[in-house]
Length: 537
Image 1 (cartoon, one colour):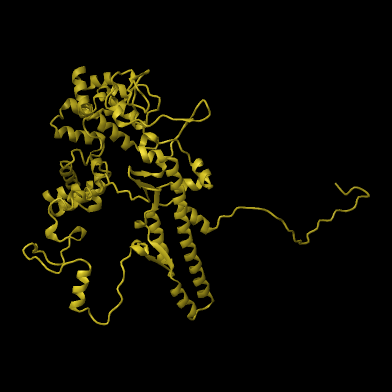
Image 2 (cartoon, one colour):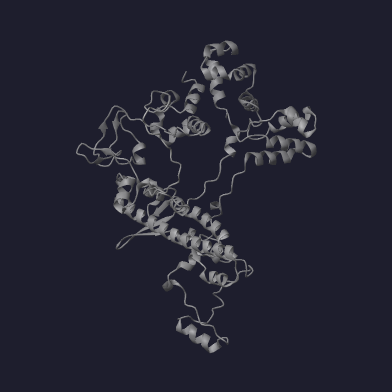
């Protein structure tokens, strides 16, 4: 439509203009992001960060933790002498120290060990016997992997081309003990006859652990049955139809195996005694010792809390080296690079110092809140949240969360993760917090009445308390791996006899009771386990 009669024409302005606006925003600089990241790292991880910075920044230097000792604890340094001390000076020095220079030759013991053979702790090799000798069993050796274990056995019985083919097959066996490759592909890749590859696989399948080298579950179980001399036609049919056993189709399985209920139950029980993943016992890794980040000790004036400096080197800025570089000839780019290095070095030193101060503040408040635990034990651990600590030290809750992550505290009662001291509470009727004390281990050793809670269960109980029932449950995370859950259940139910001897109350534990109704949903691997054992459909 055209313009209305009498209306002024509209003109669109395209001229540039300058506007001034005021706004607020929170911007996290790279240095602030790194400072936040440093809070969540343990001392050992901080040591790795410092090592990276030392490689990149020439103005940084690290000193050993021993150099941080107070001046009063350091040994006095004798001034340099132009001439060696004379005999009279040495004698006078010995008498002043209360030491006698006379030597009783008869009382001295001389070892045949060379002078440079120093044992642990600085003792000579001849003085290592007795109670002061190091416990060699304490030096744990890493267990061999499944591949190493199989390769050792192959080296004893094979050689030449056979050993090469066997080693290649061993490399294709996964951690569970199963061969994950096609034999024809292996023969083609190595350029050897298929019959040779099949023969080498047969040799590997005779190695320890029994069942290794199987290409599926049925073959793995069959190998173990053959080793036990129980692989008859009936057992072969049972192994070929493991899917029916897993689904609980017992009637159909009986018809296929042509056995009665008693024989079928015996064979099923024996079948469940075989290990579905024979290689798992060789895939475990040695547990690494946890190094504490904090030390807590009781003193006359209260509690002493300090950072473990043994794992945290001291970082300093080498200003002398910076002065030498600044005085030297340099262009504009070099001068800017040197300034950036100095600023980065100064910031890192301040960030590490601030990190230690923050950790000390948080740990001090935790010790203050949980003092009853440090004095009287775990039964007196009180409810504590991150917000309570954050409000007490006037910090954000996220900061406290980062400080308590991946950090351990060492005290007279043992070594604990900082997260251990944060427990949940139940809102009481009067508005306060009510929580049950932790259950001591001794309360599980004996239950007088199946329908009563023993008086040793909780602090403050003076008599056994009647209840609807006493139950125990093994609870795992929903994210736990299937192999871990299966290993736990297999270990428990394959060793019930030993558990019953150690724990009398465990006599009530059976597959049927374990697979009964539960307030907590079953893990998928647990459901599969109970179905395979025939107690769930």
